[in-house]
Image 1 (cartoon, one colour):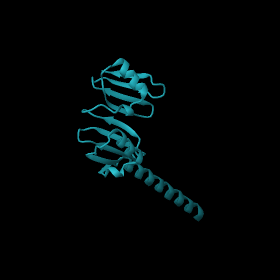
Image 2 (cartoon, rainbow, N blue to C red):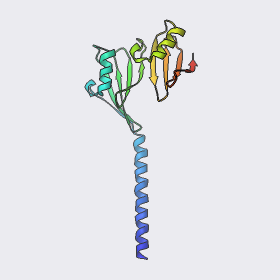
Image 3 (cartoon, rainbow, N blue to C red):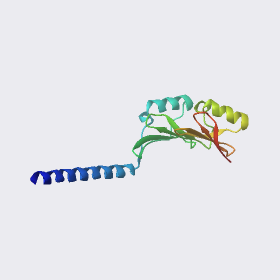
Image 4 (tube, rainbow, N blue to C red):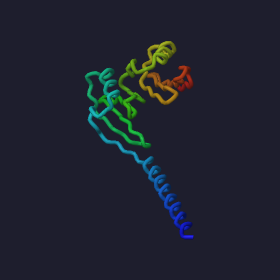
Length: 157
């Protein structure tokens, strides 16, 4: 009898601990934080991209963000241009109202398509997700491409 009660207590204790861990993860998932950091705190990949495409420009603000258990970075220049990076320093989004996205950041298939179909329309925003790339042109047209075969998935004007 005493051994049976002991096993129940162990299982109850294990269940309570598991519930507490689940609750802790649920709370942590909803915690958001962002703090300003020096540009030198950016991952090497992000710093190299800024050196290559925004040479000689110093960011006005660099934020390190923690949201949904993920770290990311956001760089803002004085003209309002924003770049977002994942924890490894790979860009995820570039947006600007003042200047086009550097062509070196745009996949060649997207440059080719927009050049043929929207001559003279600058790419002002680009974002990439797991399986798609979305661009916003200066003429307010939004295009979404499948990043596997580079077919147009969506057209929004």
